[in-house]
Image (cartoon, rainbow, N blue to C red):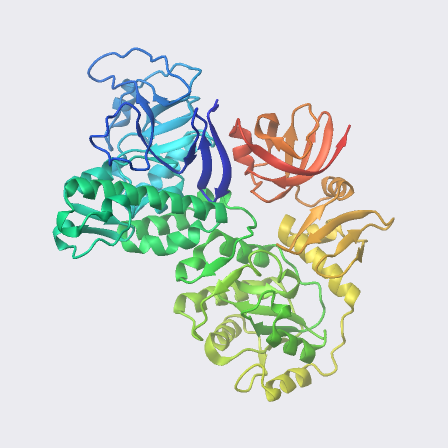
Length: 599
């Protein structure tokens, strides 16, 4: 049971947490032994001296320390180098007793399991840090073996250059030892690599250690700088996690070392590990500045849901249009011109990199209105292939009487022609020179001549149902909102049943639905996929804490709409943890509660 480590915020596998000692430590953090006299650490460096090592059992038996709440005590242990045979590790495994003070146990990726500790120290980390695939495999094994709400400590491996990727993968604690060793070797560390002291004409840093003139700067100063640089990088990482922007930072930071790039991409391919820990929406913008953005969970998840859950409900032709820099698209000048020409005689779908395709009903749904791409007028081969694959799958799932491509030549036309050829579907092209020229817009309007308009009511109802399909699963829109009415104005639509009772409301900030209690009951009673959290015998007000969770569906993700039910209460709210984390955690908020009714 974890008593002294609590997670406060999540950004994918990265976590912002607190090691709850007498003087709390915010993680990801830089820690070292409390008893050290500073001989191997930078004087005055931002290091949390909170570790107490009870000792190695290889040379001799060790007494169980008394411990206290001022430090994290590493219980007596036997460490194994990377690659040690399983039978050897099993033969010399240590039985860790239960203690009532903050404690850590030593494990390897092969022996990681729940020992009821607050933190887990990884032996043999030097053997896999530096190798992309080995690092990914080790971290996934460790995280799957230890409790979700325990800290993961990788000793002896952190530098300013790799700290962001370590945290992105799920590491909570590191130490300054590698940075110190590098300094004593005369290697000056920065976030983008290292340099030998003798090669520096000036010091590219303003930390206390670097205020020494460059010709007087020695290896002791270098060690001090390296630790300061590592501490500063961890502070930067914490701020990125708070903002929900660590991924954006890591996309650039991982470029500085080949193994970091490899590790970063390895995690992109470890879909289940990263997806389970990635929220269904964020308030932060996605900076689409590299091709790695195409592999982000949020991007892949949106494309998958649009092509497997969403179903077009309009009988009108399809008009494919280019995206706009302004979000949501409908508020842009170009899309206003498109709509003036279309006049609700066709279903509009926007094509964009890195999202793929965005039906008009989902233009607010995260991340369709939260990304910002670098516009060059040209798409790379990877972007073209990705958007073409999404459009191809979309058209295979949704039938239209006609497909009209009102798109420019750059990138968009190539995608359309590729899909047109693959599916044997004839596209009608309406653009001359540019989509917003008078001639192009006239072509678009003329092409739709004779088509019937769909009504505002139909548009609003289809929007609500489309969001339900996307949010809850295929067919959810019809199962939940077959006979309903909508009130208020888009994008703040409210959904009411035939008796006038409100069922749900559209949340414009991230384009999803929030249920009332009546809507939650309809959800539970319907055939739509339901996400449930079972709690103990209490009535949650404001939030439901993890210790009170009895069971939670495995597919619950942070931000998901969930039904919360127990012997004494029925409630609806949003998940603050994934389902697996709710089941494993002993601290923290599992769900925020919007409405609750006592049974």
